Amino acid sequence: MLRVIFTEDDLSQVRVATTADPLWEIANSLDRLQTRRGRWAYAPWYRAAAETLTEPVLRKQVTSMLLPLFPRAAYFPDFLTPPAAGGLEADIDSILSTPAERVTDELKTLALVHQAPSWGPRLAAGDLRSDLGAALRTYHQKVIEPHADLISAELAADRATRARALARGGPDRLLSSFQPLMRWRSPVLEVRYPINRTIHLAGRGLRLIPSYFCWQNAITLADTDLSPVLVYPVLREPPNPKTGEVTAAALLGKTRAAVLRATASGLTASEIGVQVGIGAPTTSHHLTVLRDSGLIATHRADKTVLHVLTPLGAALLRQRPR
Image (cartoon, rainbow, N blue to C red; front, top):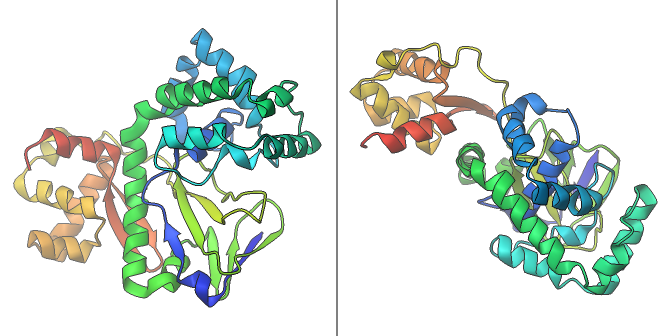
C-alpha cells in the first residue's frame, strides 16, 4: 500500500490532469507489451501494436533502446517522465536536457533492480539523447496515436466522474471518488500499490494523472523529493458480450439519439430523463439498449451511476447530424 500524507495546504492543491501524459502512456504501454496481465482489456490495441512492431526500424528502437530503459521491474528512471511541459515534443525536450549527473545516478539505481543498458554512460554523456528522443517520438506516433479516439473516450468518462465529484464536494469528495483503487481517510490517501511506501506531500500538493495503459495499480515517482504525482488507471469493465447483437434499426429514432447525445456529458439516468424530457422507465429502456449495443458504458462513482459514451458511440455521433 502507498500512503500519501496530506496537510491542509496540500488538500487545496489537488489537481487532476485533463488529458493523459504522453510519456506516462509510453511507459505504461511498454509495460503492457511485456506482460499478459490485463491483455483482454487491451486486445484490439495489442493486436495492432504487435503488427506495427514488426516494422524493422521501430522494432529495433523498442527492443534496443526503450525496453531496456522501461523494463517491467520495480523501477525505471524518473527522468523519463518529467513534469508535463505542454505536449510530447516539449516533454521529450525535458528528457534530453536532463543533467548528465542525474541520468547517471538513476541508471545506477536501475542497475540495482534490473539489468541497466550497457550504453547508459553514452546516454548520460549526451551521445544517444537524440536517438532516445526519436525512439519515443516514433513509438508514440505509430503505437499510441492511432488509438487516440479510443483513449480520449475512456479518459472523458473518467474526467466526467472526477469533475462531478469535485463540483459536489470539493477535494474531499474528489479523493473519495477513486474507490476501490484509493481510500481517502483524511489526512491520508491509501492507494493500492505493490509495495509499502509513504509519501509526505508537505505542502507541495498532488497532481493526479489518468492513464489508459496503466493497469490495476497506481504509479508514482521513485524519488519522493520530486514534485508529487500519482498516475492512476482509468477504471475499465470487461467487454459486453451483447455488443453488436442489437440491430441498427433498434438504435434509430429521435428520442434514443437524444439520449445518446446526453451521455456525452456523463449524466445519471434521472438527469438524462430531464434533459431529453422523458420518464424514468423510458429512459431506462433506451439506456439499456444503448449499453447492450456498446454505444454507452455505465460507471459507478461513489453512490452515483453515470452513463457515458464509448468510442463507438462517440464515432456514431460524429457521423450523424446533431
